[in-house]
Amino acid sequence: MPAHIQAYQRPPTPEQALALLSQAAGQAAPLIPQPRMPDEVFPPAPTVVDLQALPWVYISREPTTLRLGANTPLQTLVDNAAVAAVADGILQQSAELAAPRTLRNLATLAGAVEGAAEGPPELLLALLALNATATVQSAAGAEQLPLRNYHSAPGALLVEVAIDLEAAPHGALARVARTPMDRAIVAAVAVVDARQARIAVAGAAPQPIVAETKLSDASLNAAIDALVEAVVAQSAPVGDYRGSAEYRRAMAGVLTRRALENAIPQRRSA
Image 1 (tube, helix red, strand yellow):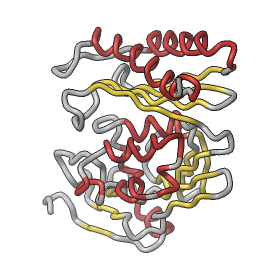
Image 2 (cartoon, rainbow, N blue to C red):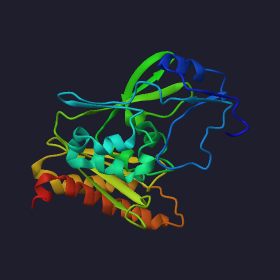
Image 3 (cartoon, rainbow, N blue to C red):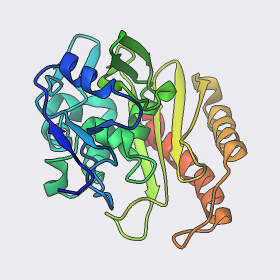
Image 4 (cartoon, rainbow, N blue to C red):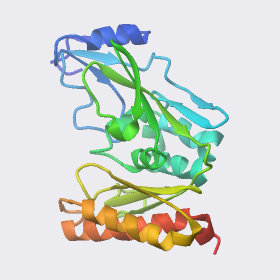
């Protein structure tokens, strides 16, 4: 264990975990297993708070809502039938892309959300495209907010992600990478239902791009064109050895169109 760690705590209750995390800034940090192994496994704080004993490992399928505990391992998402049934399997597919099976057994849903900036983005994109809601708990209580508005903050923990399935959404994922299982250079996840279409894109801006529009049979092409334009307009890519800024911007438009067209049932069955 690194020399800077003075205490390693595994609290059995959320209240105890939050009390530890409410210490002075920088004195305690949660250990949240991510699908990409970081250079430093332990957070840079003298007290490490291991969350694995907390009761946030569950998948609950209610009549129109799917609830996912933040500590749920990614492999559990891959293996679960209720997850596989959501939006043509985009949640299951994106969880499988997050990491090899050995790491999926360790990494959690919260870890995939927290680590999306430096690791595989597909699972976060799928949740954003599904307009998921986050439940965040702190010493002040629990708060629900759109996942797209969630940001990690000291003394607060992501405890649940919920997805409204009343509209029976369809979905599709499109990505480009150097190899099929390599981290995506650009990725896009589209979700459509009878009323609207939503797209979430990573790799074309520092933060995921989310765009949505109303949808009707009479304006499918116009809706797709509008979303492609919105994504390209918001793109602000930074090039690296995997892809230039120009390539990333172009792929953002291409993959947005591809994902949307594949997600629309009429197009997919044509």
